[in-house]
Length: 133
Image 1 (cartoon, rainbow, N blue to C red):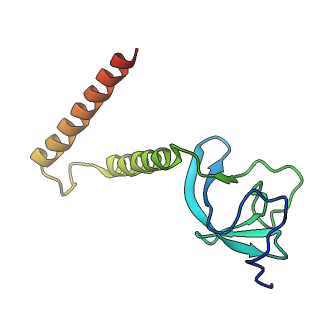
Image 2 (cartoon, rainbow, N blue to C red):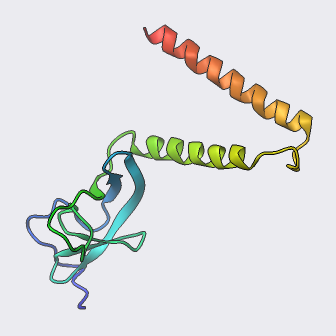
Image 3 (cartoon, rainbow, N blue to C red):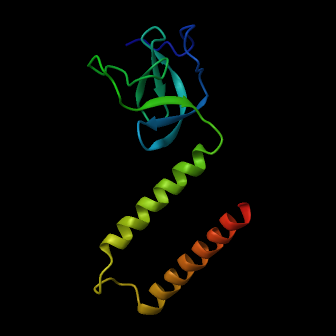
């Protein structure tokens, strides 16, 4: 496959160096990446995470099938990074809580400090929500 990183098709909204967001159908922004270049005479876009996409960002490169409802690529929008960070943090907390048991290495006081912080942040977020209404 020739490296055509200097060439890109006229119909692509992306260019080398653009920050993009990979979206999933139901979950919203999934991850951030940067356009590294174009291949296959400018029809294939390569992202910094190593994934390959059609140059228009509508589907992954070499995906077979006529009806496609998978992830797609868009320019990074304001709020995408925050959404992704929150989503990943929630995932880590869920995994941590799922593995939590009486045999966990954390002490009772350490767990209480974690719970106190969660309760404090939850109350602050509720107060902010009430203030906006």
